[in-house]
Length: 119
Length: 498
Image 1 (spheres, rainbow over the protein chains, first blue to last red):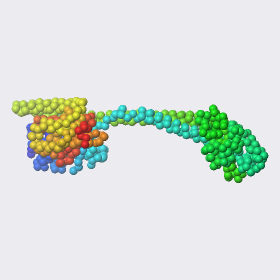
Image 2: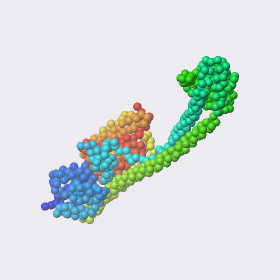
Image 3: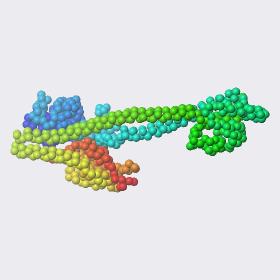
Image 4: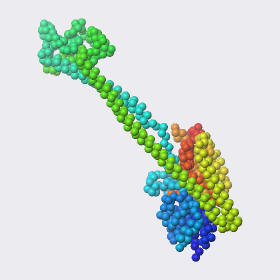
């Protein structure tokens, strides 16, 4: 079964790059640029892994995480932050995120974590 | 859903909490008041120590003088009155009184009366420190005097004599320079140049009830006067010493307290500066790291892509670099903008110009612009470049909240505050998704494909910029119902006065 990953990030070029890289690794990747669009896709397609940015237009990543957990309890979430605060990472983990990465990060590092969560 | 007022949000920085999460943030209370910026500590505005030094000297000095004067007068009056009472007791001795009664009542033979007054007057003149003496009948006629010229005279209007006839022992000190020459009896006595005590002592009948006459005595009790003077000097010295001690102690206390207050104010200002630096640092970090993430990921992918894809990623990298440069330039411009001179600006014209400059973005997002501008052309006293920068940033963020259309409402309102002058309110509202309690309110720079251009450092810097201009910023947002940002700025009185 092809792993299904959803990337929710309003940085369109970055989200596209993540998509390309993960697809090279044999994954099926969808992109959403807003929290609402991402939740819509989570509800419809139930991805296995969600790569979620913190700063999104409208709702932020923490709120989106809570709603993803409600919509798809089995989905594993990897949070991305731009400011690298330990407190923010702690809050993501407390909210149920499986992992947290601070931008900029190596795409390979992201793929490793995704593959780890898929196992 | 709750309405949240977002204090100072920067993408990635900490935010104030909504009212229903006050216990989480520890801020508590109503956060609808909006942002007032960092309170500035002005060390020179109120100098507690100097003000206390001036006011307390005046008050302590005035109170001290008043108290000393009252006490001195009381001391002199009481000591004199006691001396008069002692003298009255002496005269009331039966051995002396018995000689006077029939004399005052005139119920004896003349020879007998002459003998009686001689005995009585001898007893009087035998008193120490005596200068002069008059013996008055009940009607006020001088029956006997140490100055023969005064005998049988009746002087009109002597209030002291009248009080003594009423039964009161009257005593007071006469100063040479203040000698009351309205009293006719004073003219008989050569009293100039001397301080003396004047007593009016009522003489009562044998039963001790009815006043039958008055003895007036002029005494020069030097020892008494010396005691009074010494007592008064002691009062003034104690007042002076006590006043100085009180002033010294209070001044030390106030000065110590003032130092503590100033130190605490400096600490608060320092803490707030650090907090502001932290907020800006977080904003800078976030707004740099996102483009860096794009640059890095594009560079990582370039090696495995086709030529066309590699060229596209190269352009992406260049675009991100330009984005970073634009953001940093905007940040520097914003930092510089606050140093401009305040001028009288037509707020309506500035708003129209700012929104008109973004008509392409407005059109692209299919946003309708609604104007609700005060017709009286509200003028604000601010730096035009700074205000334009802030308005642009807010408008950009508002448009970012409406990616698929909506309404942008721009309004101005003048508020006349009487003697406080006038204020102008500028509000920019959108019908976007609104902000949750944890959301950020930001105006980041845009890569060509997604976000609009903007300032990117958010409300904390805008709030401080506006505070420097004498204004404030408030944000009200309801999730699902849009966001409204209100700028309050000092008005130019001659236009906005009712």
